[in-house]
Image (cartoon, rainbow, N blue to C red; front, side, top):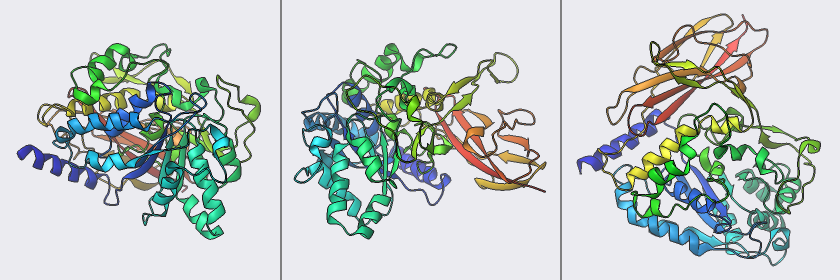
Length: 476
């Protein structure tokens, strides 16, 4: 009982420090599960964050890799494993939903490929479910996290357009947010062309190697430790000795968890803000523009590629110089290597979200006292402040704490790509203490600058949480 009450208080404190207006993101998953093992891998992870994200549906769909079959029974099998560890998960956080709530959310799309399954008479329980959830009296955005083909969503949009008034269709579509793992059928480009106002995140086409989401599995980055995506690490932290849900996590076949980036940015960690893909987070960073079709390469599937007709949220580039441990003196220092490309926007956070997943796997079997839980960053000032060009200012997180009583480390840094001021603003002194001093740059027009606080505990595994401070810099 003591552990359970502690978990409740921990949950309440997290919600409070994240802001009194904190609300969960909600999502419907479209998955071509059984096409390859990575959908099952991503589903295991998703269920371990079901206390943080409102799962509104999990729909079995087709894709270019599995055009004529859907496998809802495979979704159910993973939920059955989740059910066996549910009671222990609730010792760590009380919001994990009962399996009996999740089972009815499993739906089927048509076992038909792409646009062949879109049009009159092509409704499915999956497409009808999307419409039903959209029509519910819940004004929060509804994320469609698309791990395979998008034709179940395309059919829902087709029916909305055909059966709703213009104003009602506009209202419903305005609630939708779509993240697709590239284009895995021919309905994605149709959706984007037909519904030009639809919020849509995608690296278009099927050239997976250039897609931001592939940063989750990129393992050829020279100078970076790849341990947390190695098969040995996965076996130790996920698959073995972690109960029935961990045992469901399959070996990597083609790539590790290629679908997970479609929901990583929905996890409330103090860094992510799903409504602002341009700010960057665990799922990567994206900017709104119409990509140059001449630079879009044909990939490995049969999905046709075509020019985009409007702006979409797509690849953005970060320049990232990692902080690395320092043996003596100041505990961290910046590396001598800087990495620059779109996949950097995702893999720069990879050790953090992998360790977070590993800790949640521990929750499946361990008591609250045995397992690790993330630290709680607490700012001593608002998350948005205004300063004047040339003015000094201090950012402070003195009240931050760790629920397990672990020692915590601090790291402050400017994230230039997330704001309008693109030159790096360095700390005046140490960046690894609870407060950091900065000087606003000299400017000739108003700018914004994003500063990230990363608080990391020294538990096992080491866990990180963040605060983002947006500084508006005004001219004198």
